[in-house]
Image (cartoon, rainbow, N blue to C red):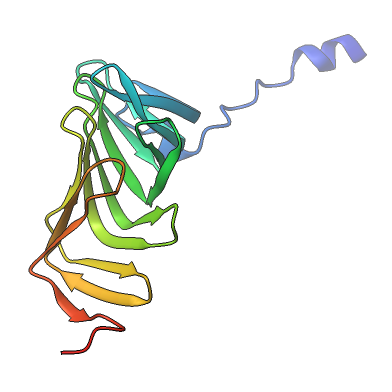
Amino acid sequence: LVVLAACETQAEPPVASEDVANMDADQVMYGVEYYVTGNGIVRGLLRSDTAFMYEDSALVRVRPVDLTLYDEQGDTAGVVTARTGVLNTRTQVMVANGSVVVQEVGGDRIETEELHFDPNRDRVWSEVATVIHRQGSVLRGSGFTSNTQLTDTRLDTPRGNVEGLQF
């Protein structure tokens, strides 16, 4: 009798939520780490909770974004965080979106809604409203450009107050 009862139990349904089951991605990966290279040199380490991969594309969608940027010596230059991102695995170019924060090692911070990262061109930039917190000052602009080591940052159409400067 016990044997018959065990044979009649129904198989459990899949554990995936309805959102995951209806996803258009061909593969879903969890706990992702991906080394981003530029010209053969590791320029960053992308970590994400979830990555969505597509068979017919080199694009990988990730959420959230946690990208550590490295300088020429391999030391951490800064960390980029954002809600979502898209990485092109062929070109290594990444676009981060949603509450993007670049926390530099020295304590300075850049905030924007969209950030582009191109390790082959040694470039990080945004073409939307940007706020830079630097040495106690707050600067606002229409975007910014920097190298991937974050040592040469230029703010587009700057406005704001710079503490300690007298005119």
